[in-house]
Image (cartoon, rainbow, N blue to C red):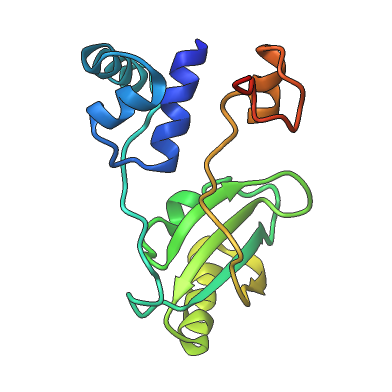
Length: 169
């Protein structure tokens, strides 16, 4: 991926609602060039979509938990994601390496709701569960590092690290 495309992706992961005009200004291209590049990034699957980040507390889903699952019988079909897809409380399902087969991100309103969902997970997928309740979330949905950091950019231009760049003299 070209450096300018990385800059576009970095800008959009920071703020997916940037206008093409603002995006063009940030990356130093014309509006039409940025529009074409964004469209190509979408077509190539680099940009998969745009979504609103919501407050789960405001949606009355303040309890977040990670639920690790593994089948009672490891020789049974590996179809837990399909068996659990009907549960809207499961936000994400990750296939993982290690002792567990999948890690589920669950969002519910209360401990009683978590207990109910855990029972539904066990019954629906014929699995054992190990649950970790989230106490707080210092950060999430951080944008990925898609280009050189500012220190690297300064070095690329021959400016020493920690320097603000060439100073008027």
